[in-house]
Length: 232
Image (cartoon, rainbow, N blue to C red; front, side, top):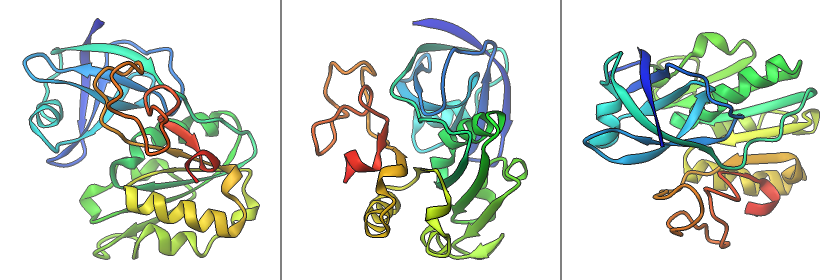
């Protein structure tokens, strides 16, 4: 473990924030770090850039992170895990809720690679969006209709010609991803899809077994990014 200072905190809402570290990590989109919030717990968080994590407050540790101050220190282990496979061709990114976190990093990386990136990004309400202004070719959806199109991510996916894309990347709630795996299978595009899977991780290095999926794969080592074919 090494220690990094918090350089900046960008708060998106009362419960959402992006924490920037004092140093960039050698990382790729889809990888995660184990963050030790001193006095609280060590938790796994996807990188939203080489020097940031984007967090939603759902417990005491994440609440402390959302409200952390510039200059405070965090313990970091990693980066760990299997990243997304990039493309310089056409890509569709599908994000639901806080699942946008690793996809922010991926979006920026693909744009730098010269890829033609389209996004579908859905949340419950307008205040749940993170960095919406940076996604130029994006369908925005809110369940309450407060911004963009009223509806769910799955509604927008049905309207896309999935055969147009070289790669499809997904992260979001479990129910959304399960629906998409089934839908991609029926549409014949499952092999071009990749999913970032969230599991509770204690060690981050494949030893403890706390993040093993239903198929016996460790999210921290074989994942957190899996091909749709693996998850099928």
